[in-house]
Image: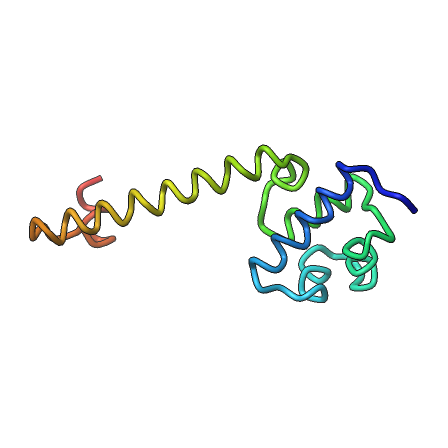
Length: 112
């Protein structure tokens, strides 16, 4: 069966996130309460999940359904994630360079 561009992007996103999280198809199926063969059928473009199953797959991957559906959302999530990593590195470097101790988790709880 021929797939639309959107379906192909969604399937590619499912595979991409599964691989990024070092998950097997079997593990994703288990986390999504679906059959391994069903996940395999999706990733080989033979099947396309109904919305309820797509939502279960998103939960199994630990991502929002919108992330699987929207390429634009994907790009924005990745961009924000990279910016957060940059900011964390900058803060660590600043604290280290200026010999400022970072707050431990217990210190943060006492302050807040």
